[in-house]
Length: 110
Ligand SMILES: [Zn+2]
Ligand SMILES: [Zn+2]
Image (cartoon, rainbow, N blue to C red):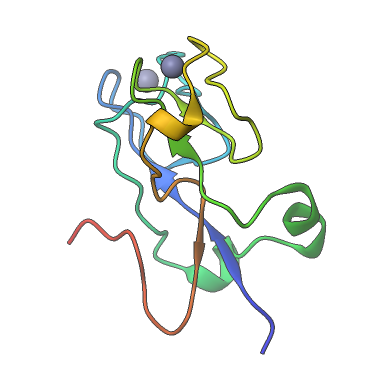
């Protein structure tokens, strides 16, 4: 079975905007960067939310990682924090942008 990739969503704690796509690292409404307090969740309608082939080609399987120094999220393919230059190896892996679905849902808040 082909792997389905779902893009996570997050809510902005500052302006209250809901369901911002994981690809955006800053709020699309107020511009506040996503931080450690922002928890990813999956959309209700998983079929609609699944990435297209084209989108899948542009994204990676590996989760984003969270900088231990400044709390910024970074793509899995960068080794230093884009915000502060902190080392990836010092940082813990976070579930980040894409969740692999294996019949189970990851990253739900409830
Ligand atoms: Zn906002
Ligand atoms: Zn950093």
